[in-house]
Image 1: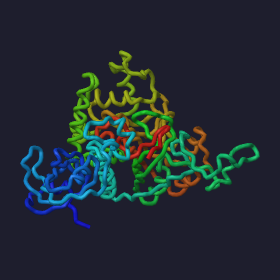
Image 2: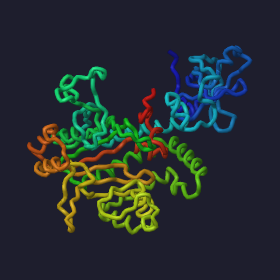
Image 3: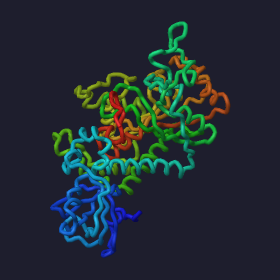
Image 4: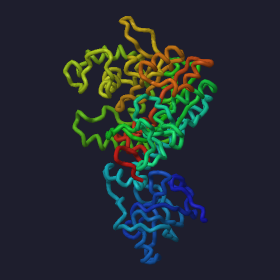
Length: 482
């Protein structure tokens, strides 16, 4: 096969008058002479100039938007504006035709809603080229961050019999015949006849299994798909998403906060350093989008300013109790501008409260700690009751501008008696989690970890506003297309 050059390399080349071959997809073809060609290696197109007098008319008709072609010719200095090089083609070959009457991606601006309907083709647009290049960079940076710090990457199971969050919003995994479901004597589904001989689900988290590995390796991380059957049709929820979950032995809440802050700064800096063109494009795109909004709804920062804001500021750390005091006396609360008013300790904070703390009060990312035990999970380490006798846990949430909660984590409850008592209070069956409790029976140690929803990170770094636009094929209620 002919060796092809990537367009991203040729756009930087000064090797004029050398013969090159490019292969890609036609973005536009003007005046039967100028082809804008893109091969996915970058957002930029290279101009291929053809001599229509020396090409068959039948071939020229097949150079249409979306068609895949191969072009060979000399790399020359461009005389046109907007590009430094172009290719003066001597031969053009059609690799794959594209019917211009049916191809849905015409050379014009398309709405994100429309592009979601053709998610199999939206990668070919500049917006999604940029988004998924940034997504790739962030995923690579995550692995590099943990690898460089000696963490072990664990693949935790996708199929599980436990519910780590205790919320019960899980997808069932079964091979039972729905039309002839076996039943026990009391009429319940007889899972003993199922593939795994018990009820199983798609996982909502790899945390519990990650804790097992941390008790042997010291520090591990997971990065895998997770699933939640929450019937939320919003711009912030997906039924299938990816989670990064480190677990570290011999670590407390302070260690956990520092690891999370270091990780966030590392991956954001990596994206800024390695996706300059993509982020500048997305920055311009967001600014143009902002101009269409009323003044009071416009972003305070540009995308690049927002990313820099997270790098240059130390994350503010405060307790939930301090946050409640600030929110209670805030203007939006006093003037009843919050949708959910804060009137007492124990309230579960909403996105509007989290964003107020980050964007208005502290003007920097915020780490909230020591939440009421009643609104947190069973595995979080219980603090000693406060001066007013209120029970809190060593939990933490990291809040970011425009997003609210980005990371949730905690020091884990390593004391067997405290953990089993908490499980009893929350009606979590101990016999099903005997293996988890074994880590508290045999060589228990203080340990901590957190979870970062990867799509939320990509949403933040790209400036996109709908989480369905930062995952290749979004899964949400009543949609599992492609």
